[in-house]
Length: 556
Image (cartoon, rainbow, N blue to C red; front, side, top):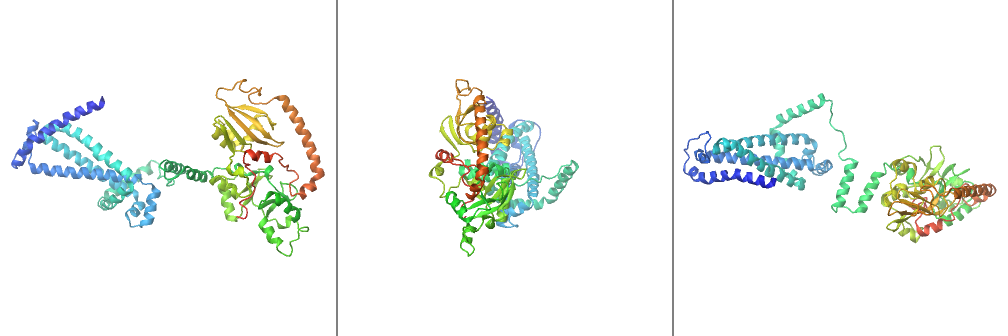
């Protein structure tokens, strides 16, 4: 309805104009000696305006209006160009090129545009009002206002600025040369306005922004836009965003935990080490003295092969500690980006991660960091299933199977579970999160209801949860939905008590076994305090182990 009213009013405005032009054109052409009068009278009074004067004023108005439209397009084109794009064009074309001068002083160009467009807009409006008044009398002011509003909005703002947005570089390149000449003419005026602006900012306590040309959030938006427009694919977008996330990701989130480290004693012989190497096929091994908290260096298999080729390479007499090289230690709270920079600087591929007390928390390799960017990296030692598997496998619409060491944040995002920021900060893995909710390390078969999900422990050992199955409720969880869980968060107290007694008994037996067999454990090249995982093979049949590889790409 509003559109119809607007069109009706516009027609009422334009109808007298068309009538005046059609009735006065011939008299204006026939006579150039008519007397100008300014009193209010009908549209036929336009015949008293000399034709040559009307033509000059109309031509002047067209030039002013065209200049205003061009300046509006130039302003939009310049502001639509990304600062890094202007800098790139300036570097490629030279400092004396149009973009080179724009990069040096963009404020000067914007000031010139604003001053010139204001002048053109004011004078073109005044000229149109004068012509309309002389043609139509006092009512011409209303006609000029209505017509100029529509004309300026469409032809002076919307159309040129829309064209400039979609062709910013071309429009800017076309307009920068005349703008440079115009800036020389208006330099005193522009300089005066710039001085007033700086004076106002200083008086108000404000300063020029020192923000980077492109912020991290803007870069993410640019990347998302490039993916939506087809410039990059989803995998390339993920890689770019993963690089940006390295600054905020702590090394504890990607490290191989201590219980999954394969270490060797410094007192082990080369013969004992070669027996271990046949089963692990790693290229780097942490070397400890007393226990895994006392890492003294890193053994490089490449260095070992060089030693075996020398005259001193005796398998039975040479101790591993002799060949160990200094290890790099990093705190578990250090950002991954800092660790990567340090590894590149020192040209090493493995670092030992220590906790706040100086104990060994785990290790991180260059491959671990690269996997954060490009995804899982597999080599010839990975199983066939691992080449196709994922940490989190979706079974059906409401069921997932996941590794117990899968990151809690990734699990929450994948299955749509709500997890508080405090829990995300406190627990790194879904296994650790469930151990807290289930008041200890659960047995296989135990389950717990959290949020709108029921978690089943499919596999676990005495130290951690190995495999978890999550089922989402299609409706609010009830006792009928989870008949095997009496408490929505905790498992049966009686089974907990029995399990605690069993764990205590096993730990006592394990401790005595370690005390009696410590030498044989060292001889096997393992930390006596680190238990092996007998269920690891069955886990890898369903899911890829997230921590089976504890070194960088072999012989990389």
